[in-house]
Image (cartoon, rainbow, N blue to C red; front, side, top):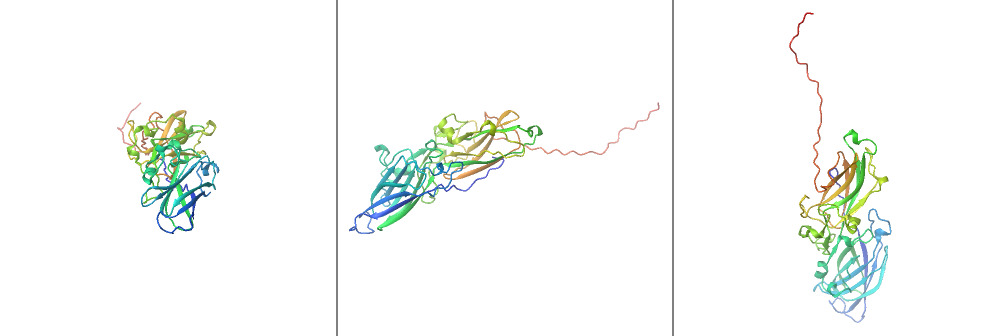
Length: 365
């Protein structure tokens, strides 16, 4: 938003998974890897932080939960449970219990994943940590009250009763239009009704990511570089998409009564758009290549449709990027949303020069 681009801090979109481990066989030896069963119950806390622009119910929506317990030394699955159809706004406790062995374990949780990796089709069921991390989701799997999340934690199951908290984070990034201000320089565009903001959308949006969570940075979800994704795995690679499922996440259209942005005023409507992580550094052009995600503000200035493209740079999972834009000039062509608007401001200085002596005139009439 060049113009002003403000990058916010990471959204701590986190759900707490309380995992209680109780020894099932009292005669089992403690602390020996694989010896003695544990019964795990999973509870979801209600400490979800707010999603900007969503209702209190939607911002805590948990529709589907999958929990996996892996043997840390072998990477193999020790126990798993899936619960769907929850429609929970927080504070939900799974009735299913996991029977697992004791010892060093890694507990994973997926929320709102669209594929059942626990007891779904055989080809989709995961048996190792690596298999789970290689699974992918699409941005279009997400929704305003249905965000795909993932998290993991290393534990040692060895006591009679044990509690473990797994924080899950959203795979997507959020782009929040915080402010648009009308500061038009040309007086003709300073009159009432001259500037209207009609909508916003994202250009160059990756649509695919895996569930990998690196040990070095457990706040990150996903390891697929957007630069290796083919064009079919991108939303709006050259122009605004016309697919309804993609538009629902990457665009917003304003009602006519809300569009007018008067001179020296700030736009009263805010939007939150979503994208998957993007580490591409190439600038967008008329020829497609993996490129930086761009926020495009759609407007009418003096009755003429135009756009204001703002390049966002790298996007990371579970981060919120706040955007502020000041409009001083008429925007670019809606047919070329990838094209950066180049302005050269001119400052005019007027000086009265000294009189130049002309040729003397002498006339007798």
